[in-house]
Length: 98
Image (cartoon, rainbow, N blue to C red; front, side, top):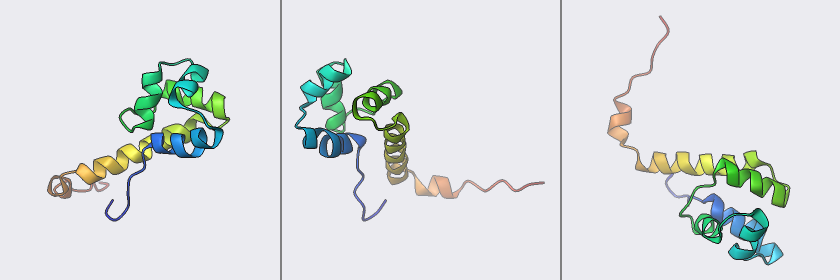
C-alpha cells in the first residue's frame, strides 16, 4: 500500500474510543475483564484484535464485533500485500473455466 500508512486497530481503539473517554489501557482492561497487557499490546500495535476481544469491545463501546474484526482483517491483508513476493504472485496464473 504505497503512499498510505497502515492503521492498526489498536490505533483506532486508542484514538477514537479510549482517548475521548479518558480511558487508560489499565482501566479499559478492567472493564473488559482481560489482562492489562492485552489492551496495551493491542493499542501498541503488537497484538491482533481477536474474536474474543472484539466481542468484549462490542459490549463495552456498542460498536459491532465485526467492526473490530474487519479493521484487523484489512490491516492484515494490507500488511501481507506490502510484504508479498510480487514475482511469486505474478507467476500464479488465473484459473480459467473449462
